[in-house]
Structure formats: C-alpha cells, structure tokens
Image (tube, rainbow, N blue to C red):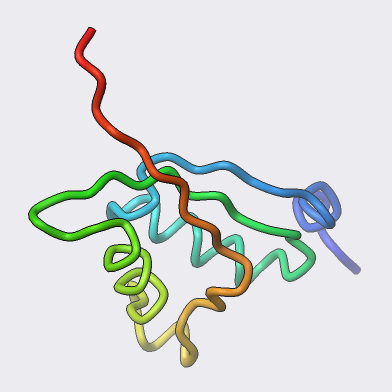
Length: 89
C-alpha cells in the first residue's frame, strides 16, 4: 500500500533550493528512496568555492549522507541543475 506522500509526488517534478546543503541532501535522498515515481528534481545551484555547478551536482550524485541507508549513489538521471547567480538587492 503506497503512502499519501508517495501518491502525491508520483509523476511530479520538484524544485529545490539549497539542495547541496546537509538538509537538502537528506531531503533529496529521502525523496528518491521513498518516492520512486518522482518525474524529476530541479536543483537551484550556485557556483561556490571555485566549483562550478556541474562539479557540485556531480559531487551530490556521487555522495550520500549515510552509506548504511543508501547502497547506491543518487540516480542523477532524475536531477537537473539550474544555474543561479547572486543578484545584489
């Protein structure tokens, strides 16, 4: 029996900011593990500490928070990076 959360996210796309931080990585890992029907996850990523967004996304897909819970790396085919740049206000 599927949960209401799994049913809700089935076939949907999700937009996440802060996905490369600790909480964001936990959220992404949980969504991918618990909601296999998610269509895609869009991540808003900024270049940081000399790393471009492609490098940061690659690090995210190769690493998981807890190797005990996740034997596989993130399926990068569902994650798409979107370029973000800081804009002074």
